[in-house]
Amino acid sequence: MSNSYDVIVVGVGAVGSATCYDLAKRGVRVLGIEQFSVPHTMGGSHGFSRQTKIAPYIGSSYEPIILRAYELYAELIDESGQSDLMVTTGFLDLAPHRDFPGYKQNLGHFEDLEIEQIHQRFPQFQISEPYWGAYDPQGALLRPEMVITTNVRLAMQRGARIIGNTKVLDWSADSGGVTVQTDRETYSAERIVFCAGPWTGKLLGALGVACTVTRMSFAWVWPLQDFKAYEPESMPCWCIEDEDGIYYGFPMMNDVPGYKIGLHWYGEPVNPDRFDRTPNAHDEELIRKGLRRYFPEANGPLVGLRTCLYDHTADDVPIIDVHPEHDRVVICGPLCGAGFKFVPAYGEAAADLAVTGRTELPIDFLRVARLL
Ligand SMILES: Cc1cc2nc3c(=O)[nH]c(=O)nc-3n(C[C@H](O)[C@H](O)[C@H](O)COP(=O)(O)OP(=O)(O)OC[C@H]3O[C@@H](n4cnc5c(N)ncnc54)[C@H](O)[C@@H]3O)c2cc1C
Image (cartoon, rainbow, N blue to C red; front, top):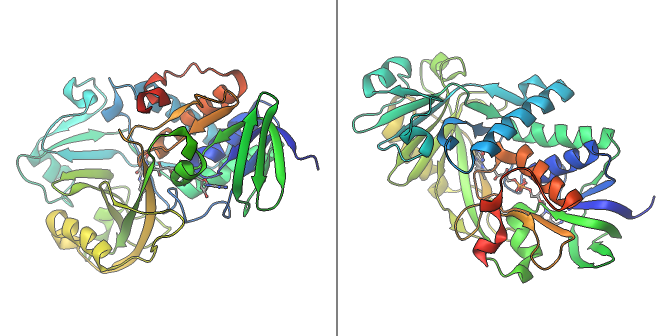
């Protein structure tokens, strides 16, 4: 088999798999290279659930991106027949302010809930004044592993070559094309797209942009009573703004017994190739603190506790752009700890940039120049 391609995608996690699928749909000869197995639990895309919602992004730069992502997720479900890839649960945002543009302007994408209404509709949440609730009926739970697997399956059915357990060690680009050296073979292509998530800084160090990686944890907890109240028919995906960060969670699904909860905060900086992945007592305490505050009656046994990686830029806004020094190189990451919901749109934009050098999606705020 030839080692020469139109486009090489480095990293077949969330956005790398979406980029491979998008390129394959266009008939581009694409090679996706992944250092671990596809999918895996070593980066930023495992744990069976991710939230998506529309209301907070309305009126912001992310509005066209989230709307396009919803369209593309619907197309992915249609083409794959994988209807459980996205489960509409609604999304409940609980905060003592209305800072998101979509909430401030009340552009009609959510229901405004006062404390009594929250208690009536969602009695699981122990919330009091000055909290206020925004309920987005379009909020949903995405299945990250299933999304990656589906993207890869459909891409390969369309002729893409995707190889796991192959690490990119080095790359170069010049006017003739790009060369990628892996721990197995060397490959060449017309263009390259970096979708390396937490490893972006390691592969693109010469870019001169700080990419920090932090260690995060999340848990599944068994509610002690009233189990039905924690099932998707009764419990939406949710976020609660707290002095320690934002607690977030999901209803009980079939993957792991219990309801899932995590704390969204900056995290503890680590080297993605060398850090302690084993969950510890501090990880559990971060979760227990939130349970004591907001779910005291459902603060039950811990069923699962895992670690995972966030990746950050200096302003915690992702990078999607052509490399400023190499026009054959596209950068698609870091996605900054909240990127899953946008993944098919980011993948489409990255594929556009690789094929034509431009994209219709308004991604100027994601360009790298702001960080240089
Ligand atoms: C605990 C947690 C909860 C989250 N919750 C949400 C949420 O509710 N909603 C939301 O929208 N987002 C959420 N996010 C963020 C979102 O999941 C991530 O932004 C997104 O999944 C990252 O995708 P990615 O493709 O950039 O990275 P990854 O999926 O990690 O993919 C990068 C890939 O590149 C590969 N790679 C790197 N270097 C090399 C190399 N040298 N050679 C070959 N392969 C390489 C890696 O192995 C990896 O597979 C959450 C993240 C975490 C960690």
